[in-house]
Length: 188
Image 1 (cartoon, rainbow, N blue to C red):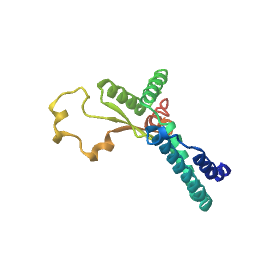
Image 2 (image 1 turned 180 degrees about the vertical axis):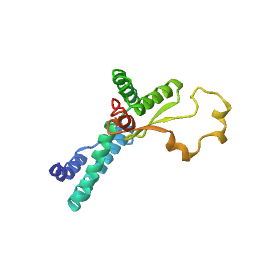
Image 3 (image 1 turned 30 degrees about the horizontal axis):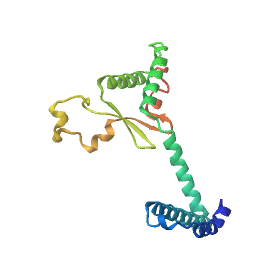
Image 4 (image 1 turned 45 degrees about the vertical axis):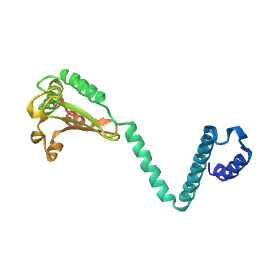
């Protein structure tokens, strides 16, 4: 790729010299579009040349940037969705049903019941920030039209936001449900 960047300036100047518009197209939108694309190509060519020199000047910095961008890409690619959360809760619930009540972990059962109750009430919500997702609960259902839902003085405080988070999803897994239900078949 670096060799092709060295050849690019000669190609662009040759293309500019060969490209001549007839008199009837000068000043029209065709010439303006051609100039736009030509200038855009020149800008990107210059950016790639600068990138090449930056990589040659400081390879450690380039490695750090590439590692960071690759990490962000894989985190965004493996970000779990609300459907993943529902599927995980249902599959764990199905596995728990197969275990005798004498062997079940009460903390795991309570957590699964809390999730199911929140879904039934419509107060469990999903939000994604690209690389991390959150499941959180609210006090009221979205369809609720009480005064408490509209009054600005009765809205939750910013300090109570962390207590409303039910689960955190990152790296393709919902971590709270994973931690709380890992040993669902071990009596505490």
